[in-house]
Image 1 (cartoon, rainbow, N blue to C red):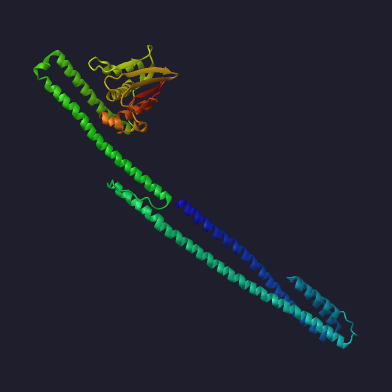
Image 2: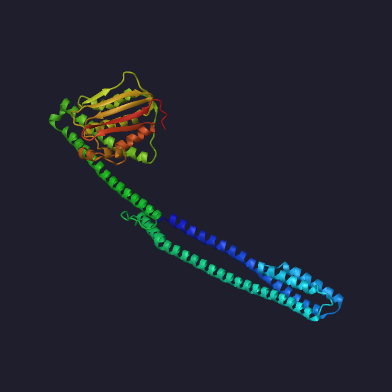
Length: 455
């Protein structure tokens, strides 16, 4: 599981708990508010009912008409006030009964029999007493409800607190065991790799993000190790490629001491051989220098208007000389094809393509170099019938220090030539394409715009 998903789940849980707690607190607050009002109304009703009982007794035992009238008014006023604090239908009906009984008592004539007056007063007092009892019950009920709500609030608060503590504890345990530990392991692997332990690899464990980071680090370490092996192999290949021309040059120099090598024909052959080997050594060293310049971002172009037909003729002179007798065929237009380019760099690219075609083709097979114009593009093709390239190896052709399986088996090299060639053509706002079939041959296609504004 990813850290992102874990955090989303945790935040969602905390949000739900916070929302639940907020809703519960609002509901509890509403219930407590209602209960407090009910308790207040019950207490006020109780006080008014008790006051009415006192007024009723004073009225019954007082014979002064003025005082009795004042007490009657007070009774009706208190009963009316008590009606404002009614909380349910039962109390409302009881209050109607009390009011009816009280009015019957208060409206009795002065000359009514004593026994009847005592009976009505007792009924009225009993009604007020029932009202007192009802208010006491309501007050007790409100207190019980308040206590229940208090316990509910305490239980809810404790439960949510425990859930929060449990959630925080689980998240902390998970982060420590499943996130921090793999993160520290990855950091340790990176530190050791930076200190020179090139074989160290990170364990791809933990959340998805850390596994992806560890995988990227391992891939990078493997690529660096592979590139280092390629560079070491390059050094060996360069040393081997330079040793052969050096040996040939030493043999050529020694041949001049021989009597039979002093004829003009022999000397010409030796000089041609020396020229070829020096050209070969210069190409190897040039690839290395250009590769380093490209990696450093220092590839420099000196562009002018040039005839591409003349450039191709200059590039193929070495391969069309009678002494080399390569089976090279040119197919060039008669008119000039003017482009803005660095002629030396374009010749370098063509020399690389021609050199590869010669190296990887049987000597008797034809190599065709053609130039054509299509729309606003100049298209140069170098076609051979050599060993060809497997389809799965074509995407790797233009990577530095890369050589295909058939190429390594057929001829030596640094693996920089095509990499340098592509970068040069890209710098001219062009591109290189390749069509090849293993065992059949290859066609390298250089496409350059006719109106180039080289970078």
